[in-house]
Length: 343
Image 1 (cartoon, rainbow, N blue to C red):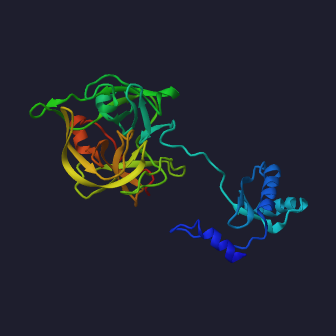
Image 2 (image 1 turned 45 degrees about the horizontal axis):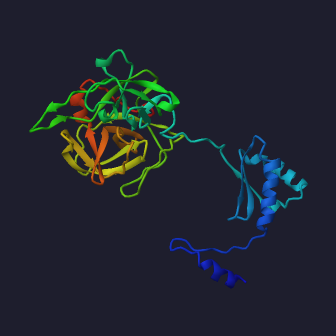
Image 3 (image 1 turned 135 degrees about the horizontal axis):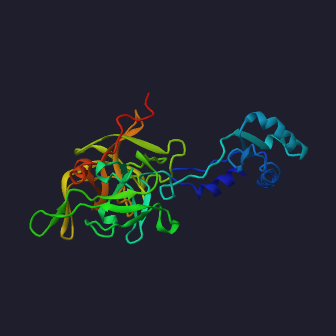
């Protein structure tokens, strides 16, 4: 019987996974009936976190907050004539819903989805302070092409995460003008605009998600880490160099990492150009415009801000370095001297 079963199941084997046959003490129907009983009589107790019919262990698995409660719960299974060996208890933390970069998150911070009803979704780059905009405690930096007029002040309104939720955060208050560079082109040093924030903000903080995707590995996580939901900006990198490893956090493709391949790159769009941009091979997509670009310091679990992503060139992504953002907005302050959680 086992050999015949192996021949049948071998048809469904994959190169990276083969079928394993294990001896089970209980049938599927028995486990299903005991799981149903558990859901009806045990799951409602405050100390029970989850119930699972675990086919790998051939047991009904029950997650509880404290294993000291196991003996008490087993008495209920025995009273119901459910075999003791069919039930396994696992100590577990309570379940939580994950916030994502696309949810409404307070206070505001870098990496979150923002929405201009006229242009659609973008990403909030980073939170800054500036004496030039003294009427605001904090301002947010995103791309100028996320506003209504590319490269001109227009008082575009922004929401987080979107206008449908009616969570207004502020209007554009500054957007440096284009200047004539060469020939028929007009240029800027960075693709950036300033939003005056009317809501609470976490200065020098960027949202932190659960997983990084390295080059060629697709999208990273957009789920915000419930344990460490932010990364603090403790320094800046004015001009990254070729070969530098940098990350970004964006509303579409999450936390991704890549290597700088080109510096001093002039990026052209119709008759407009962004000067001194940089190309990098991390994953990015539509809606990631405005993503903060940074170097993650594993020792300090904090970041050095390196710039803001704004577009693509072929299969690579393009960002404005921090040094060129300062040329357009020299009064911006974006980091603390040291991460607050360092000893």
